[in-house]
Image (cartoon, rainbow, N blue to C red; front, side, top):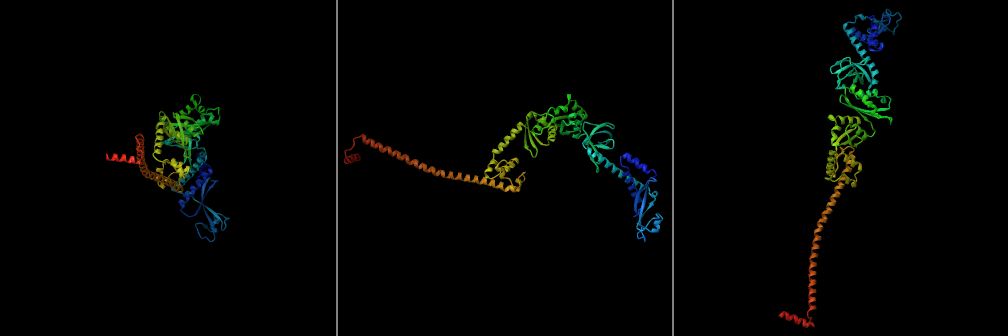
Length: 487
């Protein structure tokens, strides 16, 4: 026990902990062990005796006259044995024999000390490394724990889990590697420092070290998407018009980027010029594929459609969808890639579906607002017939359409159908009136030929009378007629 303070100092230096923290931990451990050994309700305190260098356990009692509770109180006469200046109401401390602490109590004290020291060590590590997340650090592989690796950071150890390692890499004990600090946790299962070789920040920090233009701020890294061991896409932007951001990162004959590729064990790296325009940025991000055109379908939801030639589709998608997946991660948009043929077929199908029914635009004449029309179009409702067959629940399921808009939509649809019924009824009345008109026309046509026939007959008779020998008077005429009749 005489060298206990020296042991505390040695432990403090080894763990990098304040001596007072370790001393307080030892005091707490001694108190726990004493309570476990003496098994009493006495008030105990631990104190460091600088003269002897030992930790002394005291029981604290209040001077009372008379004594009511012997456990916590002591008589004045008894108190004078320990302190001549003791008075009623004061407190005295009586030393307890620490030699009486047994093996079990000592083991308990050891566990408490280790726990306190571990907590203090974690607190120190957290305060030192929590502000260094994303920083590039040099590590030494210390040992393997299953698939994970334990690396030495100098002041502490850190974990390099299997999922934070590149599939192209394998390390052995004693090998030096460069990692980035990913997380620092004070408590829990993953307490301590966790480093990574698979994070995009590793590539960004390596470019900052290799490219002076990035280090001095002339070229800025605006984003990085990575699939460790496979491919990385990094977007850069130049703040100086005379500096080519992509060329600066590639370096003379590719020396700068090649050194990073060697560090990453041959991982492919695409360096892309950043643009504020998402259409232009998407065209760059999907390289090496050549993009025909880009259409933004929903700027709020960040959804775009990319059209490519048939020969460029596999290049744009990449191996197992890797190229478009990394591009979408870099853009922060949802990307849908289609060929020219697929787009043409889609447009034809849309036109055919629109032609098969009445377009929704006719409902503008019946009180439907344009913004509602746009919401319905976006949801794939393109005809009045389809809209009329939807239930109120289906309508409210469309984004942007609430229950308060459903009655207005129903009124517009009903108004359209009422107008359509009125037109059909008017058409039916016109068809029924048509046969009567045709009958009258037929009667008129029948009478006219008869009159027309009679006309020429009379005329012919008159013409005949004029051409023959006309009778001199009526009697002659009658005689002639009579003669003719007799004959």
